[in-house]
Image 1: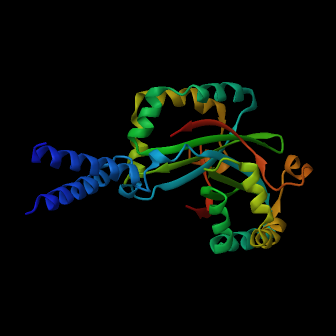
Image 2: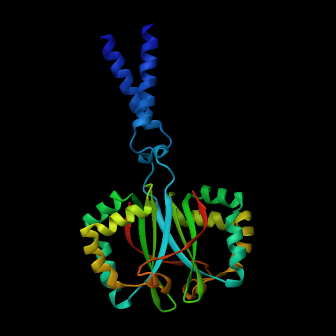
Image 3: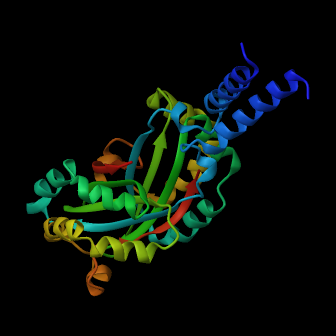
Length: 143
Length: 143
């Protein structure tokens, strides 16, 4: 084999290997599953809820990451005199229910929820199931 | 220079070049700016609004992309007997207001809004400004 062929082949191999091994490449990640939820926020607890979330506990964020949650945001908005929270998150794992059970079993997350749960005013459908957040329906998505 | 050095150097250059030129690498992208908005949805127009968004026009999606919008989702949810829309999107450009003006000047987008605007019931603060969507306040984010 001529020297230039070895150089080209090695360069090409390096290029392909660089692409295939790059840990940041989204090609290797599957499309995340999106979740968006809504719940009420008690006005008298709004300041405390915001303060908690402005300084989230590292242990809880770490547990969320361990449970394959990414790009998780919570928004607050007043509608007709009441406060509501909207959350958006992306799930990259294979077992959402299992990961949610892991979250619920984590002592630090339980400690966090002991602070946040009393701030929230679940909508009737969530309250009926003993849950905090209500599901929404995705009607549009653009990647 | 010895042949093996040329091979190693060429391979390394190929690897770095592969990484640096990969169009999918998020390293090259800056952190997008997130926007989340809310508006009302007229119940008698809900089915039409959903149908429009289940089959969005390619021209409008293309214009959104050209205006640096990505990961754009819209959700619907009933709260206390009324329907609301929540949108979440990420902006990757450098001039949000300018890009929004570009959207507003696009004839296809204008045609699309002619269909969607009458479906929506803006909240008072948006209505007062002649707008459709109301801002929300981000209280938490996890990457």
